Length: 112
Length: 114
Image (cartoon, rainbow over all chains, first blue to last red; front, side, top):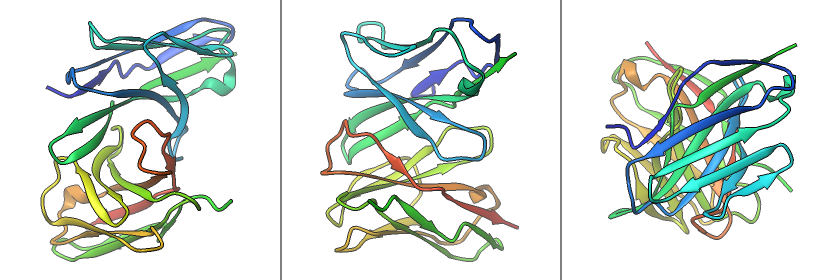
């Protein structure tokens, strides 16, 4: 079973739509959580960290449910420039130290 | 402030050969991690170095090895290359080894094994 699971999509939405991505993780000892964005043939870039209390950055809202081992990302009022792959990332403590586990990513295409 | 730089950008090797990839961390960052990203997949964690010591490793065989130098730059070495090693190799740095610091990625090295 993969440690970080995401729906690969693609999600095709019109401009202005609200879209939500989900992510589940298997290791209950996971310690920190992030969403990264990756444009085609580019490196991933941090979109936002995810905190237990939930956090918002403009049109983006991230939520964490530790009991269900579930992370979400909500994008409101989608823009064409939001088209990208969104990667869920979980930082876990292991015997050999810390391991950063990425999901496969969820592809978003925002259309005019 | 200089970002993370990786070299080379592209590389073609044949099966069985060895390869060394290089990474210079962002200035002020002493933690470097390496990832393998196959086409259509998310990045897979290879290992992480903090102050020249490995302090985290993913599920990669021992033929994947690394080094970090006193200036915090790093190398990824892969021996006995296999066709499945063809991927984008990403290096990322963070400041201070903090577990919740964002990763700053380089542009990656695209390795093709034939």
